[in-house]
Amino acid sequence: MEKNAKIFVAGHRGMVGSGIVRALKRQGYNTIVTRTHQELDLCNREQVIDFYRAEAPEYVILAAAKVGGIEANRTCKAEFLLENLEIQNNVIYQAYKHGVKKLCFLGSSCIYPRECPQPIKEEYLLDGQLEPTNEGYALAKIAGYKLGYYLSQQYGFNVISLMPCNMYGTNDNYDLKGSHVFPAFIRKFCELVEQGGKEITLWGSGTPRREFLHVDDLAEAVVMMMNNWDSPEFVNIGSGTDISIRELAEKVAAATGFDGVINWDSSMPDGMMRKCMDVSRMKALGFSPRISLDEGIERTIREYRNIMSGGS
Image (cartoon, rainbow, N blue to C red; front, top):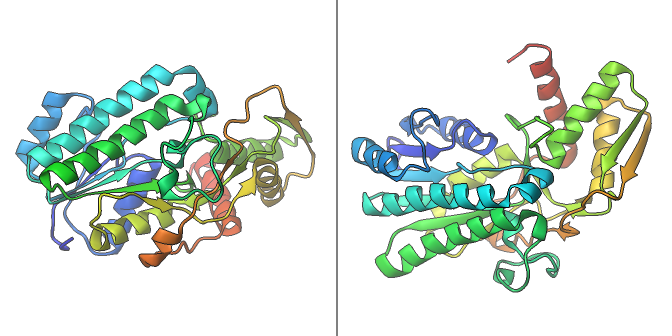
């Protein structure tokens, strides 16, 4: 991407989108186009067409999506499927129709089958049944990848697709009704310490294992791949290592200063038991994450506490 190229980052207010904007600015890209949801509804085809006609971006990074934690995904499958399909269909197809040079589609590791060999290789896609608790979201992300792949095969549209593991970090969503496990733990343990609490009960058994990556590492990977990867075959983006939910809770508890009792409610759903991706392709292309999980936890706790104290 040329430094003065017009780059549209869809979803710039979210954790991933805002991280990508920061990474682009750090690397000297100075013509970044953004729109709030009020300014541009990506589910509205006519609005998206009008946007492409008016702005004519040269590059597009699609970080916009309807996202949420296990309970939101489990109870609102129709919305997660429909809204993500609408966003993807409009942004990707109209980018092709309006002459965009290259588009980056961001998916998720949840696209893989529930019972998947570990670590998960890219070729395992569609080899088995999806995890039921987030099937709607996963189906949408698979469809988004396939749309880009087909446009590349049939019409030569330059689309790359990246499949990140569980993300966390700056500008995450800490609303307990819809947040993922990492920000939920950050908020719960910070509040416990502030309130002097000595006991907490967390959902599930704590045994599922998850792979985590700081959003700043993903953002750097996106920019690097936009400059160095031109295949429609998707690439796993992650740390290549995983940790149990129980271990994550213990790490966050220790980092916040919580020294009480952690209980587990095994009557609540665990989701997929393990998701650790093979990142050989990513590393072969020249990218490796820089932020360790321990460093990321400490950084995120500081940021959350700063937000809660009224800082920016």
